[in-house]
Image (cartoon, rainbow, N blue to C red):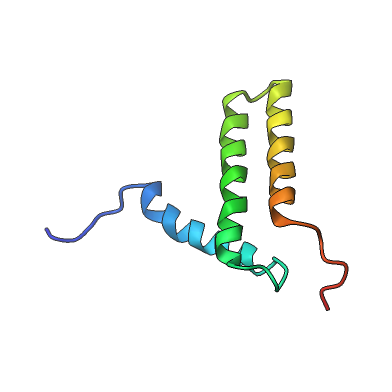
Length: 85
């Protein structure tokens, strides 16, 4: 057989990541240079924080890691625009 078979999450992850990056890019301020790049730069530490927090799940450190990931994403995203209309 010459076709590819489903191997698992690695077959879905690239499309899911691209979609998530695109959706996040739409929420960034219009003046953002390279919104998809910025979105991926925000998304990556969030996923890393989630994976790291899961490795110490059930401990106070887990909550601290998650909070740090959210904070990092907020800093990377920049200040919230006052009015988007």
